[in-house]
Image (tube, rainbow, N blue to C red; front, top):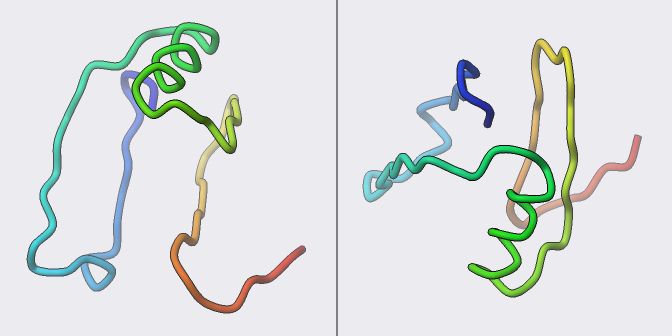
Length: 67
């Protein structure tokens, strides 16, 4: 999430053991992608969204919907 952006989560989606960590990430797509590849060895998805008002992402196991 770029600087100045906000991330909102519904409280009901988190367990009582959730820990939130804040990190300063590299700026720029290439720098961020390189950092993620070095840290996690693989990147399965990377998206850049500009001028976006809201993003809804569902993660986890369950029924998958394709729109």
